[in-house]
Image (cartoon, rainbow, N blue to C red; front, side, top):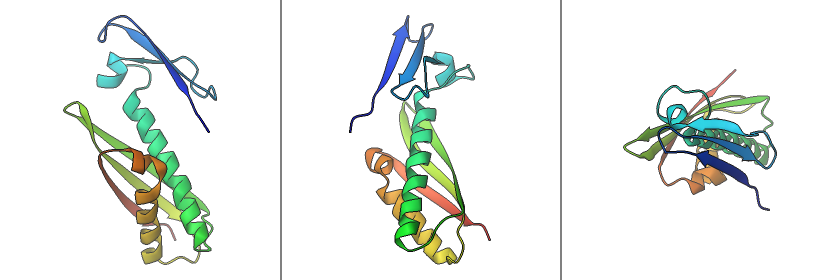
Length: 137
């Protein structure tokens, strides 16, 4: 399986503009720029897209890990915070809340750590990865 995305950039790094298009067209000439990356400009940026990819991958992996233990999540919600400093992605922090009937908090926490370690994006990232989890009653 191959997935692809295309980036187009016009101009200098600071004054130029670009757009991103994904194979699925979920992103279709979506704007990005110096300001959307390093200030409060309109558009997306690579770090935001990495956060979305990590949150999505981790949450899906967590669902599979729970399923392997015979638990079906009613809902899982993950916020991923990417820290970009000194020119590198310094860390990725996952905050997940889940509503999963019948599971103990200890088993939920173990499932979260399993997903944190074993989701494909966690394996790809060369940075500090951490998580915190709240089990909703």
